[in-house]
Amino acid sequence: FEKSKIALKKRANRFGNGKNKSASINAVENVDKYMGIGFIGGASKIGENDYEKMIVKGTCQTLEKEYLRLTAPPRAELVRPQPILERHLCKLMEERGNEKHREYVWFCSQFKALRQDLTVQRIFNDFAIRVYESHARVALEERDLNEYNQCQTQLKELYSSLSNNQKAVVNQNEFISYRLIYYVLLTSNKKYEGGSSDLFDIMLSLTPEQKQNKIVAHALKVRSAVADFNYHVFFRLQNDCPTPEMVYLMDYLVPIVRLFALHRICKAIRPNVSVDFVLCELGFEKDEFEHGAQWLESCGCVLSKDRESVQTKDCVVHESDWKEQNSLI
Image (cartoon, rainbow, N blue to C red; front, side):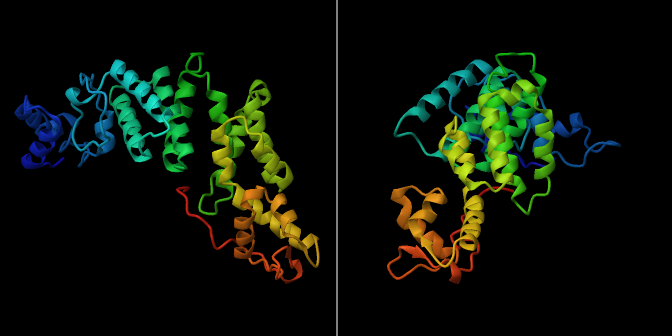
């Protein structure tokens, strides 16, 4: 662990009030002695994961705090205890409920700081689950799959360790359903090879009671519709989702399902077919038809001069040129 005194003083000036700075710097300078650095079997360098494994009891009374990676051992005066974290979570959700709320970047930073304070204090209880569930829902709403995946991974462990706490696992089935659809999405990603096995594992772990749960049953139907390439059922299920977050996840599957459906329509109906019929089959709303017609052309479809029919015989269907990049692995 190497850290210059100048850099440490600058960091202390950003967060501290001028008290106990020298003591904090000395503690940081000697941290390698207590972490086994330089001894046989000890690590050669301390990283962020090592700092997060250190346990402190927070004393900070400030509600709002920006997220920063740990580059030094956590200090109690910069870590908020659970009562302060609970108050801040309530404030965050109230702010999120306002029509003119702040940008997602700010919310994400606040949630990550909450999670960091929970980790360094080893707070893994029903409140920790509330924090991760709240961040996961906001991340899905903002189409941030990376943050959502981090939250769902931690939630899986928390649900398992707190399985006897009914208050803690009250929303477990909801997030199991999201994980099901997320794994369905991974199976369609050629860069990720574990999607099928993960999906298989979670399906085997479901209890008969969970399979009867409304939201889990809906996710299982989505999985079946995608596996069977049944685009009629898929779009019907998307219009009847039990939660908005499930709609956000299914939105990532829409381009995949649409492309397959377009392939099937162009092969089955010759020599032409109504553009309106195709767009309805592909799940476009009427106010999206103009955009939908442009999407058809980006997929290699040939439209008639009046743009009312697709010349299926002349189409060479391919992936849309408008493919949007997302944060999936």
